[in-house]
Length: 316
Image 1 (cartoon, rainbow, N blue to C red):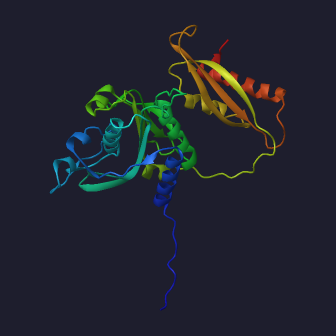
Image 2: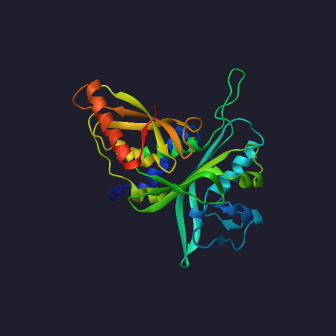
């Protein structure tokens, strides 16, 4: 038997699919696998952002429940989570990676999507602890984790999709100037129509084929031998200001490693058109241990830029 060994070629689609699976399982979600065919009722729970082209109806379906090819993974996850929520009072965290289908310009389009759904308490309720409910910020944290590990940037834009409540966003990428996904809390009507036992159900969906197009190039650098330092900032911001705008200014400083929100407050002593947010900024130098004097100088520059560009000021 003779012949040459086939040449190996990288497959980005498979690589990103397998990495996404590992990341979602690592985040505590369980993988669901559902049929590609759904019912007309389920199709109505497709987010507007993915309601592309014409639906594909099967010529000879096994039943009316499986008569149309799905345009989104969210309808299938809604059905699975709804059934589970009525039989299990603990946290429900599901994800699915699969293909969706639609017809556009007389051609059948097939795309690979990643979708997730959360509902119920954040952890199992026990005698010694109370558990808060999973919410929009849990799903946003998962999307941010995917962004970091799959190496793509995103911004959030306002969503007017009736599938969701006001707590929803379109996931937008500036590199390719396209919407690549959506995330949000399902509306009360959607929750009632699907007979959920929980009052809060949060979902997200990302087009993995677009993620491949908008991935940034990896940049490798040495680990710093010097310790990180962090400073907390409590800021008063307009409700219209997005955190992505704040991050863009903060990351403009060379020694900033990371920043995150750890508290949001609206209420007494805060003007109705504003909100208070608390941010932790992490700093690190590759050459030296940062002194308090140097940190104060960097922080002063950040606050000055935030005030000039976004009208943000320190909360007294």
